[in-house]
Image (cartoon, rainbow, N blue to C red; front, side, top):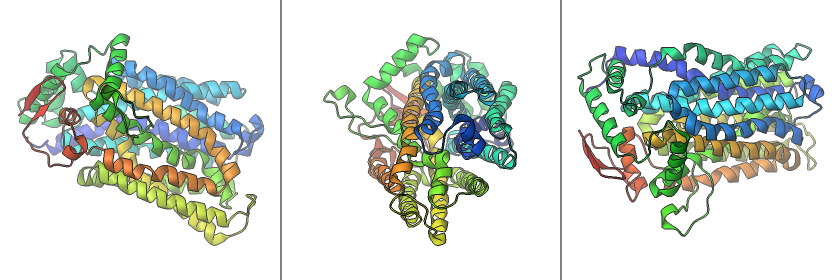
Length: 522
């Protein structure tokens, strides 16, 4: 295939930045609420502290919304295209943010956070799918990885907002950060109409000429007869022709798509390597699962830093709220730079498996250091014991785990689930993945404050083991997706040993096998 013209790629980059802004929604909440929890005014207003169960419920209610929104995403993302889903989810986030910022009690705050939680998985499901479906194969990993990097832009915005209000006395100190959670969504709603629709969605709807024009504009400088355009159109048509799912614009078809995922071995493999949720081995060969998938366990492993950085630093001997906030800003800056580096230089150079394994080892080691250093700053009852050296190394370990995670896992979190499913199942799988993310987040956001409050430094040892288990599962179960088109990846998962096959060199011209018949890709 001929390579895309540089000017064409720059126009693609510019429009995708508007989609990347959507990723800031997740990062804003992850850092904002943890920072708000450090404000005494917020604690006094709601009568809570940073380590009781009410704190966990307030933090985790957004995960309840994630579960609801994940199920909704299975239908909404396919209903009227990816752009519609982005707008729909963004409007929900705006409504939820207004309720949060104007709250008169914990009930309204909970409702607002739940509505935000419903909107997030809808946008998070649609956006990376849109980026993946619009991107050329050889830079798809980079572009989808960059999408997730903007998580830190939202996190940075929230921390800067909180720091600027640190000396303010009054309810506005915590209300404004809650209210400003709508900022990325407002930008998305106002600019989404500047974006084209997904070419794969258009071809599914019979709008081939429009899809061809879009691919030509962003992949070949407007040349509709370019090889990279004609081959992609042909490949997409062939793949869609043999997919089993029915039309995705009805609720019943979404349910049939879900049933397909749960009843085919190849689709189950994809699902469980995109959600990392435990499942028992069943005797029925049709749904035989003997694996734990990879993505979701990472969320519990690092969410403790996103939502509970303040009590973690307190346990390490840093109690000043301003110092805690500045440490958080430093973490965001370093993490953002690491994520950008991973997306630009690691994803397409080293592949997905090597990045995942590297991040896993780094996280396990850093959790061990955090635990040992925190132990040195506490007595057996959890009371603070001055130890400057241990405190410095504890903070350094927090930086290391976030940089290691951001440089490796952050690009993969949005990329991998969108790569491994075919078109008709992509939205359903993204919705299911978000349901599992929400369920896991709800569990661990309730467990984390209890673990920190009761186990103290020992809780980091639990986190170390929890993350370390996945080294083997990533090695044995994670399929390498580097260098293949989305349609070629569809065929890869239908092979008997997808992991082994994925490690072989990618042939430029090949015949791949779908679930129904063989299709020749030119």
